[in-house]
Image 1: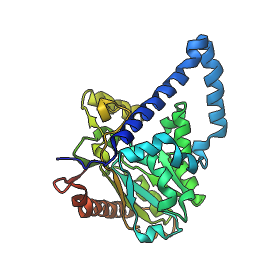
Image 2: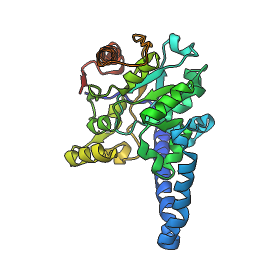
Image 3: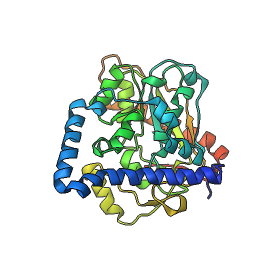
Image 4: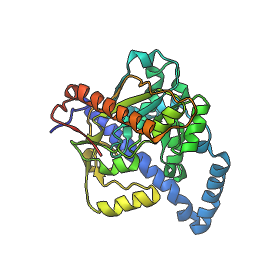
Length: 319
């Protein structure tokens, strides 16, 4: 098995490596600085007001906040897009549309690097409704200083049912990675595995609000890092209990904060028209039927495109 190289130049890849690791190091220094300067008192003076403001504004639980200019031009994002050669393929029925959808993207991958980097590409991909797109992100990300800010400016809101429904009522298109932390932990290089059998909430949202459901597959996402199964049971238990994922991985030049230079392509499928629900109540039978239809469409999307991305020998495993 092999990965498709991204075609990034050595300079672009080194800049991606330097900038991504520098950003993480800067975050760490800024978090530690109040303690280093003023001890625990400094931590209270800085982070208590920070979390109070976070609770009052609650941007992640309302309509979010996004900065398309930042997402497009921030040097770290710019060179990481070059580094993994990120592109997207959108059917004309979507690119010409100004409708409302639920995008369900697989697989999550070790770090879902493509999700953050995709934000700066949305105006070109969906010119008529890009500003209405919100991505659902793990709740924990909105409580980590500076990670919260990056998550917000790249168009994310909290991945909870009531927040998602509020966004839909506000006319937003929702982008969701249904596999979540479970799929993240299950990621193995050169294998295509999605955590889908028990993930039906996104299908229920589409049915309840009569929205077309759009499958999307990210070819190359699973190959961005080499992963380890060490302490898997303990990390799985931590993820199930607290929603915190701790992947053990190595990327470019064995660093954990920059992916390998592997070509990533997001292929969006055609919108699926699900059975219309008239009373707002989704029965288990309707949910299971729609979930089965989505599973078939996702597998078809993978199988119809895998040979173009050097994955003809891979099979999509659905767990």
